[in-house]
Image 1 (cartoon, each protein chain N blue to C red):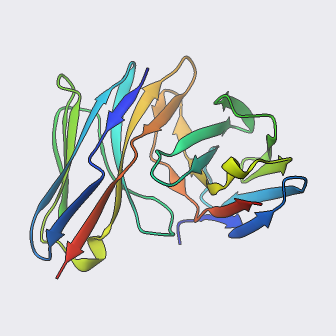
Image 2 (image 1 turned 135 degrees about the vertical axis):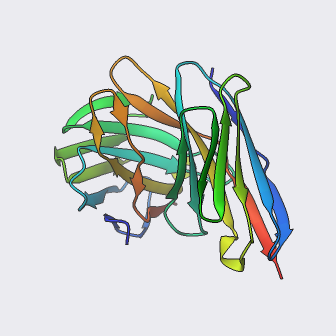
Length: 112
Length: 115
């Protein structure tokens, strides 16, 4: 079966750095997405990795190691507005379609 | 504004009611999705439509019935639901070409409570 694991909750202070890990055991892997979801709102796309290495986008970076089944999302210079749930999702290959398998999400709490 | 709208935003229904959730995307995408999000659980994919054809039914009970009349609109018809069906129902869309699956854009969701 498919298994995607990420920590339930992380707390960090404003201005700090937080790293959210995601490990997966899936078949037919073809890319990994990170989404941000504020309470009561829609998930919004943050990043996509399909090759090994680091993708940087402003304060957010995402890393992937396919051989280890591992990714992380790095949030730098944390701001209060970064308090949200961060969802790791793996893209699977099916015969005719790619679909996303989501982790349960990591709730990040940013404190003053 | 994500370009994907859902109505209603909140819905309370009894177990014997029939209701429908509506999703509309204004992004010109060709694929649409229904997800269920329960507290402390991963997003669960329910249905996928690609070019109006249903390509995925993730073992969803028949009391949930999707409809996709065109590539911009998606409905989820509900009947004789159970209390455990109470959840946030999210619609998403994406632009997919052959062999490539791009990021999905989500609507704000419908918070459903079954009494």
